[in-house]
Image (cartoon, rainbow, N blue to C red; front, side, top):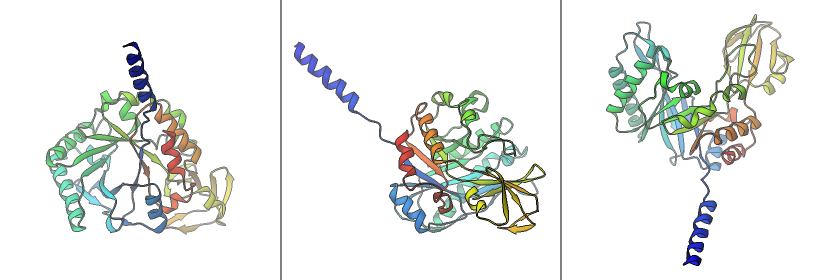
Amino acid sequence: MKIRLFILFFFTACLGACQHTSPPAVSFYYWKTALNLNPTETHTIKANEVKKLYVRYFDVALSADGLPYPVSEVTLDHFPDTLEIVPVVYIKNEVMLSSNLDVAELAKKISKHVNSISENNHLSYQEIQIDCDWSLKSRDHFMAFIDQLDEMTDKTLSATIRLHQIKYAQKTKVPNVDYGVLMYYNMGEINARTANSIYDKTIADLYTYTLGDYPLPLKVAMPIFSWGIHLRNGQVVGLRPKVTASALKMDAAFAALKPNFFEVKKDLLRNGTYYRKGDVLKTEAVSQGQLLEMAEDLGNHMKVDEIIFYDLDSMNLRNYEKDIFAQVRAAF
């Protein structure tokens, strides 16, 4: 009997020790207005066995008369038929702040518009994701909107969640969705002084210890984008997407001032943006090492079954080694 018990105990202990959690799946957000994957993007999808692509269908903003309306609608041109497309709707917080917002009508129109885009492209979908950085002032409208949308659809419903909405969940409340996506970026203030507004470990550490307490299952979104903060006389003029330090170093119209700061040499028009002589671009990005650091920190505080990288664009992909996504998923 003792021998049998010992064998059983040994087998059970070995089984527990030998069981490993599968590494998280790799997915991507797609944020351009036309879904038409180029060869680099298609290769990345195949190489990382990507099954899901979270596609921004449209934004919702307020019209001049204060009514919500869709803008920047996507056109679905070409993508692998092996991909599951998840429609994402980005709602500006100004919509939820509107005092005369009819949340039931908004939910109805969004559900109908998502369905219309999908049907027109002969695309079936199983989920709708809502992206909105709601605040304390817009909280009640947002929660009521989610409740209405949940009643109107039989699809899986997910929502993006910011770090402050997790740490202060009792105040910001928890949306009635099937799961949340932790947006692990855009942590600092956008200005000339902040080291990196996209990712700052010092800021992240103030929140990560609370991740395990959040009542919703969480996936995680991680940044692979870059931008330039356009400064004039030290003040922010705007954000310029896809701007990198390496590109500006090769551009004769810009002079390097110090790491990640570049001065405009003369008045010019570039990619639809007017720059004055003396304007400054401050570049921000997340390095390969920082992505691995993020993964390790997150893995210490939460269980992750899916990483969604923001965003799938060959201009972003060329800034990293080809196996970066495999490295990140292995670091969890």
